[in-house]
Structures are given as C-alpha cells and as structure tokens.
Image: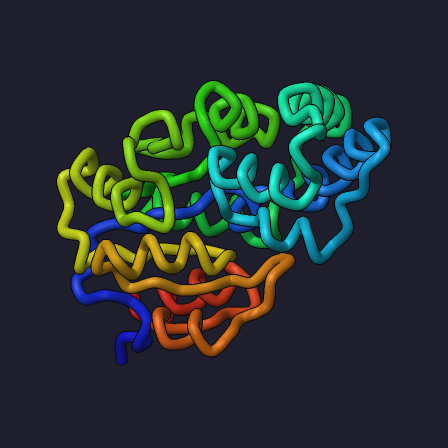
Length: 224
C-alpha cells in the first residue's frame, strides 16, 4: 500500500534548504547572536525563532521593531554573514539522511528541486559548502520570485521549471512559514521539524509530521 503522505503518482520532491537539508539554523543563530552582542544587543532563542524560515526582508522589519531605530541593521547583517562564513568554512553540516534520500530519488528518476528563502548567491554557496551542488534539477531562491514564502510562488516556480504538477509534488519543510507556502501551492507537504516544533497549524496544513528524512526514504522503498 502506498504510504498516505506520498502523492500518487509522485512527479517530484521539492525541498526547503536551511533546516531541512542543511543543518545551518544553529550556525545562523550563533553568527547572528555574536554580531548582535558586538553591537550591544541580544538575539535570544525566542527572537531567533521568529526569524526561522522567513526571508531577510521581513526579518529586517522584525529586528528593527525589536531593536529600535538606532540599531545598525546593515552593519549587523554584514557582520552576521561574515560570522556565518567563518563557522561554515569547513563545510555545512547536513540533516540526517539527506544524501541517501537524494541518491535514492536520483536512482529512481524522481526530479528534485529546492525552494528556499535564501537569496542568490548565498543559497548556491551553501549547497557547494555542503557538497550538494549539482544534486538538484532546479534551485529556486529568494532572488527568483517577487513574492517569497509564505506565498506559494517559490514552490510553484520550482514545479513549473521541473515541468511537473504541483498537486503531485511532495514538499519537505521544517518551518511554519515554508509549510504555509508549500500548502498554498497545493502540494502534499510534510514537516521534518528542526528548531521549531510542529503546531496545530502546521499539522492542519501538512499530510505528515516526520521525525527525520529517513521516513521519506522508508516510504519510497515501501512503495516500491
């Protein structure tokens, strides 16, 4: 029997990047916290949770409202980006099960894409550091769409570039903002939580909440 969260037929799998494939959210928090401290401010876990899965345009507004008008946002982001580059210099860690899942999809001929809120060229650089550059048929970044997540545009563009039907795509996300986007695109959406837990909202918008990417692999193998 086909596992309930897999579309039938499965046209493609579209992944979020940070927190879903790449274990980068903790690195971003460390870099942003250090940059804030250097400017006499603080980004604690609660504030950072509001920034997860949200593109920088909105995060700038969130930080400005929290920090005040005098907070040097541009300097903060420049120092946070530089700090992240230092932390990621030896490579970007992956979430468990990434490589074996991508290899399985590739072996089965299932198209795979990324739909991320990270802009170019930062998204491509992160994939390169993680050793995943070239694994995807399509990479859609913040730079490719006028309306980023939670709008469905990144997922719809990824499906269009793949030439597949959104309703027959599996979308894999770790954050509420991304889940809203994938669900609005009409995709079967699963959540693999990272820093943020599943909520009543995410459970209502997803077809499954999974403990790891390995459960997707298991479902694909069980489907045969």
